[in-house]
Image (cartoon, rainbow, N blue to C red; front, side, top):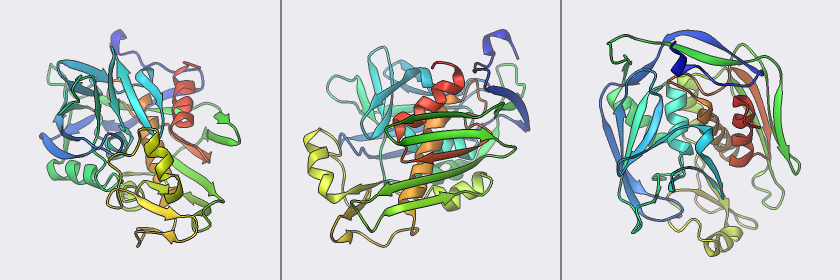
Length: 310
């Protein structure tokens, strides 16, 4: 690997071969939909990309690499920001690309607000199902560089445990030979959700597609007005989230899984930790990741610790 592609990380991580070659999409695929928070429509095209280029967002001749260095704290979603341009709600798309092994991908976005500096990824049904379908529609192929050569895919292995925490919530990762995620949530104000835990088997693309990707984002009905007053979920509806009332329970059943909210948190976590990916290598650490009452900010904090930014 050339010096310009030197992998960055803290002393907590060692990069090891996966025994596989970096991949990309076999062809371009397009999806159009409405955004959750802005309520605006946008078109997203996923393009094949050269090996070692990794994943990036392109719009109006601007490019934002998918990297934790460009992650910005924002309510209820993960945002990438560079040179004043922002892309919101990237987590579901990035989750699918990371889990399915789309290591190199150029993500082109059309349709902007009047200023043209703020855009949001479509929400679809609130899960990653549409992005999984898009990848499966065109399939994967081995990525090659400008010289037509393939590149070995590396993965980050933990040398010791690492954690991030705040206000009774935490996300931690422990050395392991496989990727496994255990997640807990607790919503005592909504008894039908309550306290839930879900633990994946060793994570691969099949487990992700069948057990995680179908899980939709969720919210508490009594908090909707407050979120809208804050300028959020302008595009939210019963078609793109599962909504729970404190007293009435789920307003739009059936759920895909009895513990769907908990599984959706794992979907978000995978997308947020994909920000650790570099040069077409794996972003999700090979570790047993355990989280409780986490969220995007905590997930990104863990990625920052892995790369040595905090």
